Image (tube, rainbow, N blue to C red; front, top):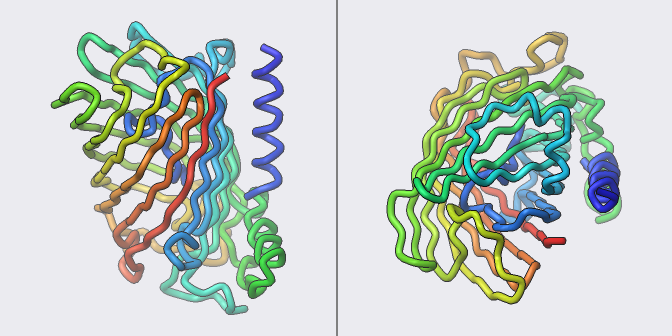
Length: 321
């Protein structure tokens, strides 16, 4: 339990130092077959040589049976499958328009926005029927209270880059209270070398309201995300994955402003929101003993009528304990 407390404290400190639920570590292609682990996920569009839209995401999490006692875990809806993991994460996301050099509002472009929140989650696995169900509850803040302006300015200062302008027009402070549900079912598999599954997801709350369907293709040499046994300590795995998905968008606070605070100086009107959005993620994963390393690239279609397709990348490091 002491290790859990230390891990959570470190997680929260980094999230507050750093900077809409862009990071999703609940799905099969992100699976770590262990009861206890730490994970750091960092995403940034400098991997695609841009500085716009979803410009940065930081997510840290810890998974342990001890987190079953987390009071927020009791609020999560999930089936009582044979094997359940319990986790707690902290996430910080930053969003900017296509230019950070203007002192004026760039109408028709994406608003500045920052999000900071805790994410309590469970991952339930049914090895017999080859299905997974995950649920997450996010609680936090969108707006200046998330510290995204300070984060980007500090990073640009360290890199001797241009000072960002326009953050004074960011989405104003509002509460984040969001629940996410994901269901996955294995369709095809061939040992430890090939897997195909289908996914259905839904989000509801003050940050993001949407529903979607997707599929995951994994190929290489991997441990099945539909098995319950923890991975062996001495092992090597390497694989690639592809995860396309379509989402039906109901509400996005990073574009439309907070659900309760309607005083933001600039937001995208509901009539301009793209109601169907496509996103694809492709990644490589290498595992040695208890250490996991991943690199990935994501692409998303335009989220509003005057927006453009956006590409970003990221890295993930995880280790068991």
